[in-house]
Image 1 (cartoon, rainbow, N blue to C red):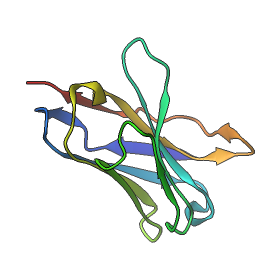
Image 2: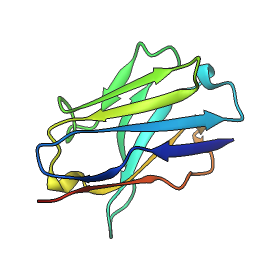
Image 3: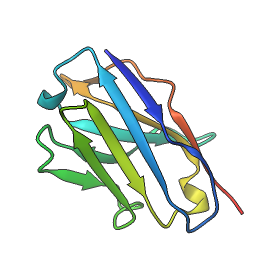
Length: 116
């Protein structure tokens, strides 16, 4: 099982970024997928989740209305469109799945820095 995140970068407050995660090594469409983030000195936190078929999506209150999670099961990718970015969105962003309540191995993540 492997996850490769990309799309991060430096953006000004109010800007947008689109993150992507390429998954491999498992039947992608069978699993919920999650975006997490970890800011310096803080614990990893859940940002958004999406069901296997894409019909169910959930968001942390802090990003609701600004972020949109989506997936392409044919390409085995999950994306996170981030709009109206805030300084507090600065973090390393990761994607993952859960099996029996346990996460698979984490990828390297992609750094998002929101700063003027």
